[in-house]
View 1 (cartoon, helix red, strand yellow):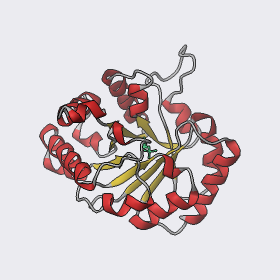
View 2: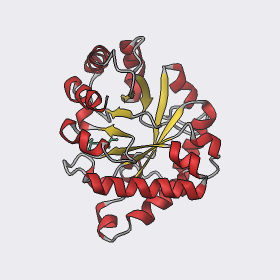
View 3: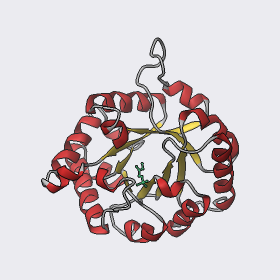
Length: 251
Ligand code: 13P
């Protein structure tokens, strides 16, 4: 049985004060939730602030990115040890904005994933197709390539520490959510691919989140799908009442 996992990706939003208020508000609103794993991913500079504001809450902190080298002359980059030092449990890897806005390749995504696994942080590997790729009926091909390349050299045993997030790029921040059927179709395809790459048990146990305009109003419909195990939420994770409502709905 896969435990639902809902994560909020705050992207490049919120100042220090609001980040702390949002974290504290969520900790209070969700203090009794035990049946859903919850994480928030603030920008690097407020990771410590948010970890402090969450206190002993069961809500975990995740980073939005990480670098694959452990230390040294990499100006502007952040290592896995630094993330652990400020209280992170998770790290997003290969978010579509990193791939398509910042030019991150599958090779870089794989290096980051391997370094995160080695560090003991838990990666959330993001994949998803562009609108033109969906329209050209290339969704399966694109997602398969991203998953195979992203998971290169990852063992079946290590898969138990990985969450996947399917985020169709055309649904991110656009208000256009994938329909429940569109999400389920790709999630089922991903699980089948994992069974081929690893084995049936491994595939069965991996959690696959959906991301892309997920909000309180579509949470139940998306989560009703057999292969949708959670959500990676952008805009709707920026307000206590919206994000808390989504988690309560799943609970
Ligand atoms: P939105 O929920 O704002 O569409 O963002 C989704 C996303 O990219 C989460 O990582």
